[in-house]
Image (tube, rainbow, N blue to C red; front, side, top):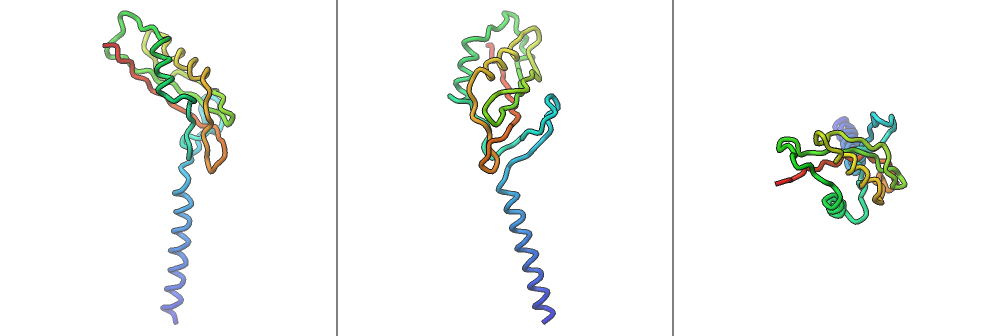
Length: 141
């Protein structure tokens, strides 16, 4: 009888623990406080925001518009920007994290990002604000 009670209790805790882990594992959503806007946003969502037309289209636009300086340093060819895609697809909280010295490529990238239409990220089926970090490496060979 004692063994049966112990087994039943143990079985209950194991099944409860499995259900709790399963619920947590199904949601990839992770919230953070954005340091620029001081707003709660998602860093990871079940569905991340997507730019209409895809990233390939954005990079094609960049290639047409951005003018590289003749003397671009070989060692400094990475641009990183960050922004928030709001619940309604608007872009807010734009910032340049890393830029190529002496250029405004980061700001040009942000201008393009905000001019395009975005589909909002989703957590548990609901639209949420998601922070996006967009790196770009300039190959100027």
